[in-house]
Length: 147
Ligand SMILES: CC(C)(COP(=O)(O)OP(=O)(O)OC[C@H]1O[C@@H](n2cnc3c(N)ncnc32)[C@H](O)[C@@H]1OP(=O)(O)O)[C@@H](O)C(=O)NCCC(=O)NCCS
Image 1 (tube, rainbow, N blue to C red):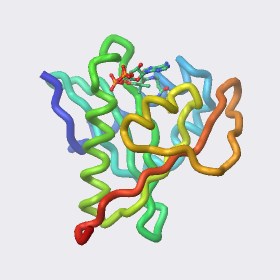
Image 2 (image 1 turned 120 degrees about the horizontal axis):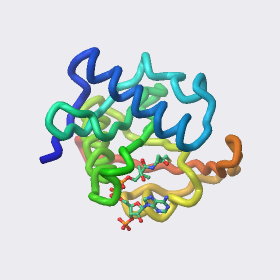
Image 3 (image 1 turned 90 degrees about the horizontal axis):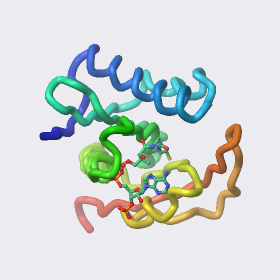
Image 4 (image 1 turned 30 degrees about the horizontal axis):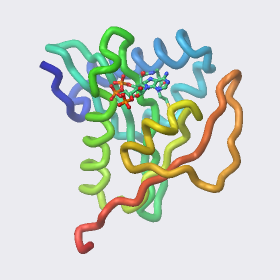
């Protein structure tokens, strides 16, 4: 059974970062520094299969009740089982707990439909490239405690 929650120990944080590097650097060819940037100030969520970290995502405060969702990575063998969708739902809940009203993400353009199905919309920001990857900006407004 897959469990999802905040990385609880240094070991789990290190496993999440190793997974980021495996997926974004090794698999997608994104520069290591670019991949690691921001981890030290982010809330890191993990999906665990037993003691193994099999997926991760992170939330980073940008101020003014805005936070960035990023580094959504699922081990290849675990893809297509709804784990990313569960991680994103858990990030929504964590963000709401911290008083965040707007989530921003910079996903691969080809994943627009997936994130749209989870409530994100493409913003007016121009698409850009990281290496071979076309990146778009999407956002989502969370219902606040009084709405
Ligand atoms: C994208 C990713 C996070 C999805 O994780 P997952 O656990 O397989 O996602 P889920 O099972 O919750 O949902 C899969 C959905 O994403 C879609 N999807 C997954 N990979 C896709 C791809 N490469 N191209 C298009 N759609 C894709 C699936 O079609 C599916 O849509 P559906 O729910 O309509 O069937 C995972 O494939 C991954 O780690 N990819 C490499 C890292 C990456 O690109 N991360 C996203 C950065 S923006």
